[in-house]
Length: 122
Image 1 (cartoon, rainbow, N blue to C red):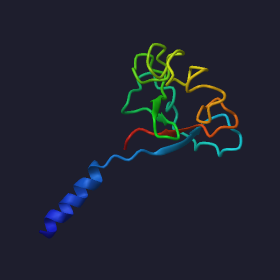
Image 2: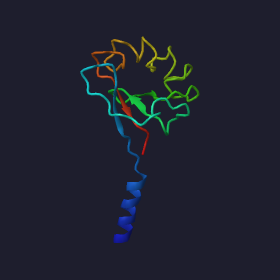
Image 3: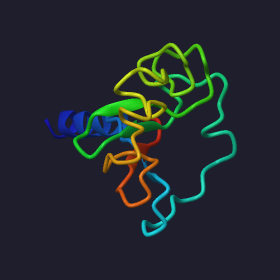
C-alpha cells in the first residue's frame, strides 16, 4: 500500500502542469518590471499554445499567445485571428477593445494594471 501511495504522489507531481508567472504586460511605469526572459521568448515565429507565453486579464480571461507566428490561431500576431485582429474585442491590437487606452487591463493604459503573462506549461 505504501508503494502505491508513493508511486501515485510521484506521478501526480510529474504530470501536474504549472504555469510560470512572467510579470505584467503593460506600459505602467509604477508596476515592477517583468523578470528577464530567455532570448526568443516573445518573438518565436513557430510559437503555439504549448511553447508561448500567454496573456490573461484580471478576471482570468485568455487574451492570446505572445509570439510572432502569424499562422497560430491564438497569436496576438495573427491579423485574422481572435486575439490579433484589430477588429476583435478580445485583441490587444483593437484600440476600442482589449487594447483600449482606457481599459484597466489594457497593456496600453499607462495608469492601468496591465495583463498577466504566464509562461508555457512546464
